Length: 188
Ligand code: ADP
Ligand code: 5GP
Image (tube, rainbow, N blue to C red; front, side, top):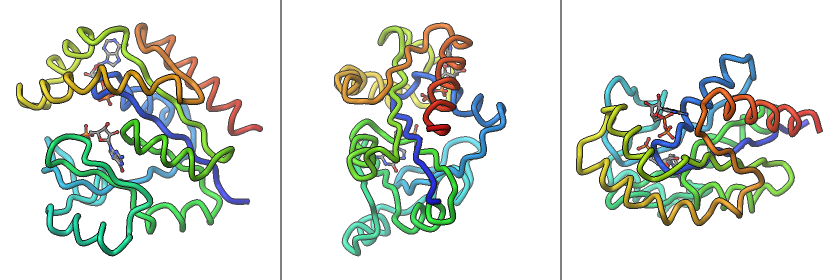
């Protein structure tokens, strides 16, 4: 049987990665969809692990060659996209796949896969909380934090289009609720 898709989208800093890591630690067996991006690696990120890091020229070549299921310019000059080669083989082999994509990418994947996909929106308690989390995470420059925060209000408008909205205020509650909806979806 072909695998199912779990899509996570959220404004940057909402706690999406934290919640995804929790699910992995709880023993869910997902294959990650590794996206391609034209941004530079940050911290310990390695090519082919967190992302396929491409130059802007390589990224454009792959767009022209029709190699993406979807792609977006998530921030100015920062492209991110899901490669067809990345997901088709894994899904057909029966693996459930996990996607961490921006709100538009999430909606596009959901539209394409319909009932086979569960689209989850992780919502921060407020935009101020988001800013504080990004500052504390300390992985982005002040300019990049500004870019991320200023996009959040627009991103929050997409929440009602998702199958499930999880408000990540108290982390333990958000984690438990996410685990519940994912389990229910996979058992259907
Ligand atoms: P995202 O993947 O959505 O960009 P992260 O998972 O990296 O977000 O979380 C951003 C920062 O906020 C991290 O430093 C994380 O430890 C912290 N964080 C996550 N959830 C909460 C929460 N409920 N309360 C306070 N801080 C949180
Ligand atoms: P970051 O730079 O923090 O790793 O990611 C920035 C944003 O790009 C996040 O909102 C993330 O979900 C999104 N993103 C990552 N990969 C993809 C992808 O393949 N497609 C789309 N549309 N967005 C992505």
